Image (cartoon, rainbow, N blue to C red; front, side, top):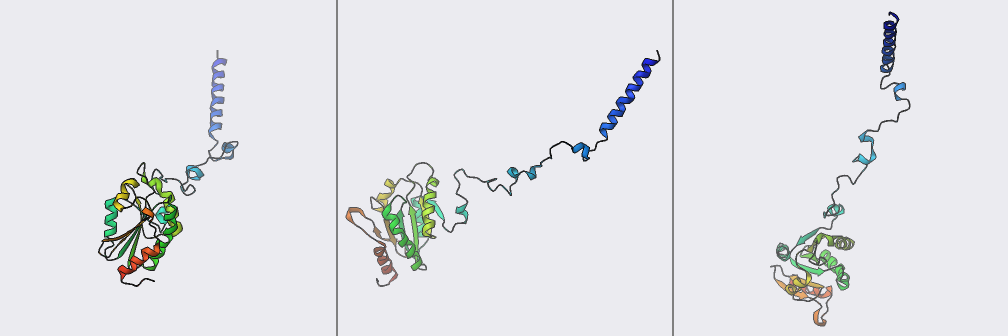
Length: 222
């Protein structure tokens, strides 16, 4: 009758000793770390490190690309009324407005001469480019990549506009033309004095545009 309780007592002591032995292994000891994989914290993970993941937090959905923030080429989205306000803001200077698009070969051929004009008469002439790449449907910002690429190639750092409301066919009657390119010249008081277009067999180059500019500036042609 005594042996059974003694047996239970001995077994209890052995179990307690085993438990103490397991708890003696500290988390930082070699015994505890042996055979386990090293832990990787969130800050050590390349996928979650903002310093190593430049796209983290980047917003795209319809927003301008990052290059647009640092580019010298700035683009505005304006309707007809907004464009008229922009032209009027340059009162005191001759204003040359070029209506063009990247799908118009003659437009792109003449455009570099607009840039030359802006440099030649930087103090007295304000140049404005109006892209008609937006066709009146969808988001007008979808037209920006090809427009910006061309403007940056030409180093067009004056006022650049993407016409962002009406389709081309609604705009052309306001310009008194049926097709682009169209170039309009305003005098120093903001009055439209000449519209160049290529309708009805008419042709023009920026030599013709510059001649009008020189007249308004009181200079001789040459």
